[in-house]
Length: 129
Image 1: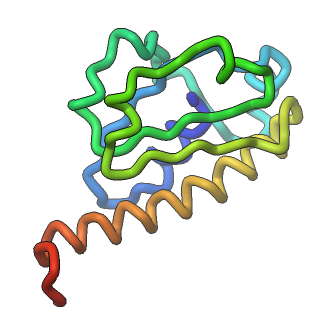
Image 2: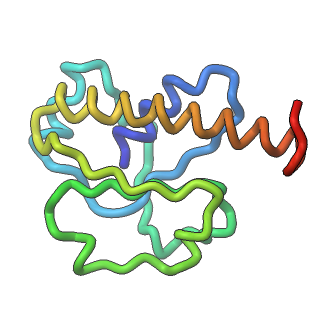
Image 3: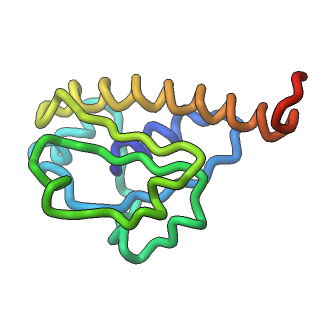
């Protein structure tokens, strides 16, 4: 989650996008090597997802790192009701450069979705711009 937040902050350009990282700690091996790929997490705080209100967010992205957490932790249904709700199943698990590159690509797609959502909101539903 912290890596995704870092990439969103880096790639958002002039978009007004707030971010919050929530959930479990990342792999110690991955986090320890992020400086090798230019990712700085020093200003990103991770909070418990239960401390956040889903209604404060337009988008929720769930990162599935393949550790079986999805079967042990169930998010409140309100998170799935966001304008954009995505589950990213990462193929990379521990090599910092691979994890970072994979998340960077996913964030690029997410930013395109943000742009589409912003256009729909600006134009109104059912109309064309």
